[in-house]
Amino acid sequence: MRIPKKLRKYALWLFIASAYPIYSNEIFATIQDVWPKIKTTEEAIRILNEEKSKLGIEVKVALAMDQEDKFKEINIGAFCGRNEEGYFIGIGKPSLSRFVIRHELYHLFRDGCKGFAPTIDYVVEKVREEERNPRIMDLVPFIKRKYLIEPRANIYALTGLKL
Image (cartoon, rainbow, N blue to C red; front, side, top):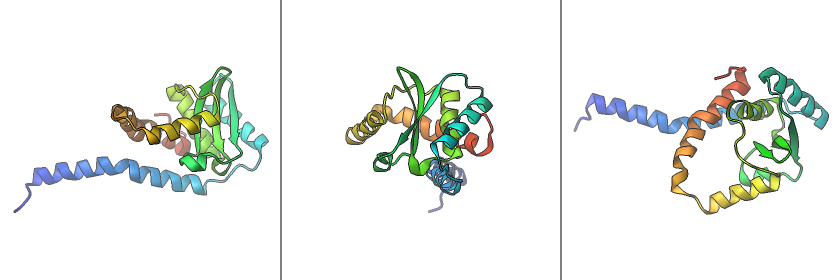
C-alpha cells in the first residue's frame, strides 16, 4: 500500500516538529560545553554586569553559585529566579560561562523570570517534586518552554539576536 504524498509531507513536518527540542537541546548543550568557562567569581560578576548593560537591564541581579553541585542531580545548569531582594541567577560551577549568563539574562530580559525561587535549595526541591508528581495540565507551558522560550534564549546567547 502506498502512502499518499500529502500524508507523507504532514508526517515529515510532524516528525521535525516533535524532534526539534531534542536536536536543538543537544546542539546548544554541545556549544555550551565547548564555550570557554569562567574561572573566578569576580570575572563572573564582571561579565554579568557587561551583559546586563548590553540588554539594558537596570534592576539588580545577583549571582548565586551552586558550590555543592546540586544542579547536576536534577540535570540543570542554571536558572533565573526572583526572591524578596530582587532577581538572581543560580548557576552550577561546571556551567559557569558567558553563554549561560547571557542565556539566563535573556530570560530576565524577555520573560521577567516570573517564577519565585528564593534559594538554590528551593529550586532543586521544586524540580524533584515535579519529577515525582508530573501534571498533565503542565503540557502547554512545557511545549512553550521547549519550542519558544529556551530556543530564543539559546539563540540570543549564541548570536546576540533579540527575538
